[in-house]
Length: 560
Image (cartoon, rainbow, N blue to C red):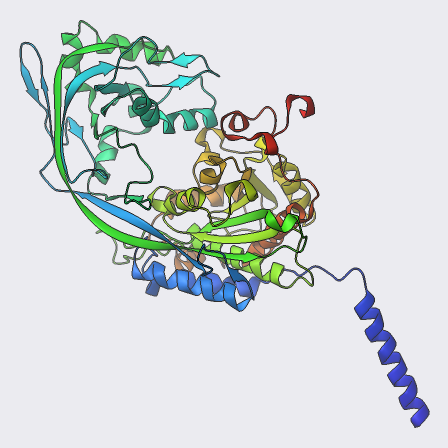
């Protein structure tokens, strides 16, 4: 008996030693059940659509923080907590307060609102009284890369610029999106005090003037800096408005210019030359301002390498959605945002659990950021990038999760921005480990790389990718592309982006696909965190030329 007991103890001891000394402990794997638990809570009616600044979003943020704290992670905000509170200004146009008129040499024109013009809330001023001479500046673009300078021979200092909506068709899609976002800045840099944007027949084809009127009563929002100034925007630009082309015909005729000829030129993708416009414009409005705040939730897993722990891999997902619906056609008023973006946050939380389960932390530190205000203009991400808890130059990469559509077993992955940095190679390897292919951007004309939270980090020079489920399904009975398109057309930003509605139309939510997505996200971050080399912007990337730094960009000599 004693002999048997001794042998049993010896065998047990050998087993324990073998387990303790095993150099290849399996990596943790994502759980579909855990993802389901997070998504179900975050998409519940009780959170009332998680609108930025709302109680429902505050509850969601508190839930996310408690989950991260329970994993043993540390708060990553500057004060050591899990909450980076974002001070915000919410602005609402006072009904009936907007007016726009032109005083020309021979006549005075007063435009009707909103048939001939519209304007939005003013984030800078509660009472606007803008008056100035006008200059037509074509598209209002400046780019050495594309040989554009619509301001080359024009003096717009102290004046209001009148610019065409849209952009030239010959520009590549992502570059078009970047240049379009810079129009206000170009005008401000040259001393303009206001902007009138002119609707065109080309723009009417993709976004009719009438469609814009559906959003007339939508509030605007911006984060505020430590001095209470608007974080996104330019104080030089006092006000702006959008013109229907019928309202501008007389204005251009008075300058001896044909608006029809200008529209004909841009239809042929030609760049019109600017010129001074006669007379003076007057724009007035009143805006109500409300001070609110909303939290980014930030957590960190400190790295294990004495040197590399001071560099950070940033994983992001936005926690907000669009709140309650005003759609009178349905009794369901809660925009639950199950796919957009409770799914992304659930995957972020599960990724955090996998990292917390590692026996040894990776070499670089990992920041997990559930950011607010994405639906209001990437506000939380912008605040995080402009008021970072660690120096932005120490953030080596960002992987962003926004609206993974977990309605089919995806066989491929899309990583917007993969072609712009060496992160693309990392994503391909990480996906291949899970039997998933990396596909090219199926919608390049949409310039999606510039349309989610990661782009605010890109603007600060951080290489980034934005992950999305691909259009190929492992199930031959399901067309992933059609399902994705159907979701986007029928449920995106609608109350039906909820678990019950999606399940009724597409079958059970594919939490197992969410687990695969999580494992890929984990693989990406783990490789970057442990690699001797940090990701680099590609030498031929447009965004490297605009935002890249010498320390995180390929030189022309290293260009493949």
